[in-house]
Image (cartoon, rainbow, N blue to C red; front, side):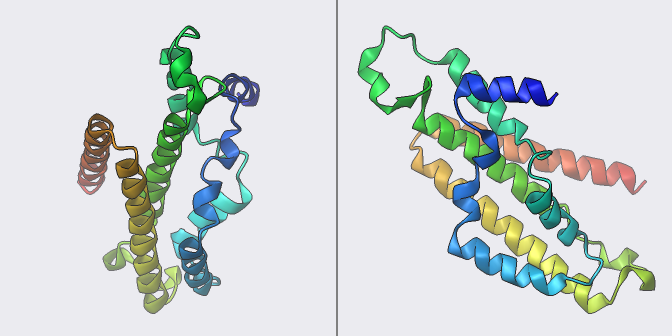
Amino acid sequence: WSQVVSEAEKIVGYPTSFMSLRCLLSDELSNIAMQVRKLVGTKHPLLDTARGFVYDSRNNLQMRGLVVLLISKAAGPSTAELSFQHDMVSGIYSSQRSLAEITELIHTAFLVHRGIVNIGELKSCDGPLKDMQFGNKMAVLSGDFLLANACTSLAQLQNTKVVELISSAIGDLVQGIYYENSKSSE
């Protein structure tokens, strides 16, 4: 599987492991990371999510962004269209790379949101209630921050059709999560 991903990255000329590095280096996210560090020693699942992003970066292959780049390359303009190639690297426009990054950012926001704990179902062995409540606040705020950044970047693409499609996909994803949660609570 790693070889397939490596070949796909060669095709698009872009290592997806660095796709959202621009976001990860922002000051705002550093502030969030400082707050999440307060959860160290608790059993809040947000820590596992954050740990996965930091320590498991090679297994977190950012497949959604890679798929966006592969489709962009496959459906891109022919080599005869030279007038548009000034903004292109390896057959992919910078706006297409941005869309791949946005796709990964949205997915990451949903992963962070999934770290929210149902306080009503906690047991005493899960950790102090105060820690779990703080972790939930951080999961909501961090996920919302990532989603807001994705939406801002999406608007900067200045393509209403793309905004409409991504917004619809986010809505479908949320509906799916609600459906999944309602089935698991039955």
